[in-house]
Image 1 (tube, rainbow, N blue to C red):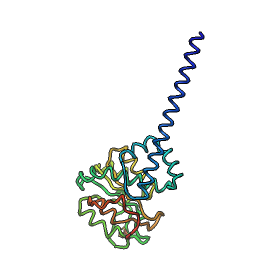
Image 2: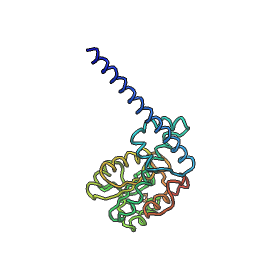
Image 3: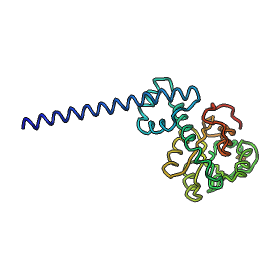
Image 4: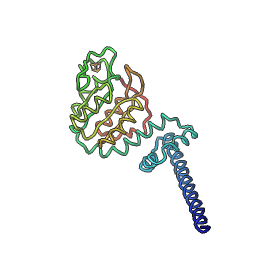
Length: 232
Ligand code: SF4
């Protein structure tokens, strides 16, 4: 009996030590990744992208907390994760023909005077040229993309189910793009995200140069470019 209690105490001690070791290891991993991420964000040079993604999956909460201590805001980190995701998906995305790819634009990008009406496929742009969509949509469609202007994720899910694209580009605010990428990952779609430069419900902005680079497979190192230079 005394022998059993001795063994139990030893087992609890060993388990406690293992737990501490794992927690310590995760903390060190989080700290190393937080420092590397802060460096990447501040310098625009993304180092060890595969390590970041694996680390975020393991210890995202720790990394977010430590990045906060290093002066990296939550929005900066989310933007970084989206750029990281784009970078890791870029080769796969480029290998898929444009006819198998779709672009989803949020309806908030259009002009407040937009004459387009809502259909089950989203808004059908009338090319009135009151917003950047009218000036870019023909170029994107000429490359083979199916471009949809949608009011929300319900439309995206329905269109994806109907058209079955292999890859998509999603434009939206930070959280929409983040959630859209996670949804696309679950659906097995290769997703690329472009974050709008201005949030809101009407007349938002996107960097059309970034979107066109992404769509055409341009090697303009989008992830290193700051989110400036909006063209409506
Ligand atoms: S260009 Fe198209 S989307 Fe933009 S306001 Fe005109 S009809 Fe609407």
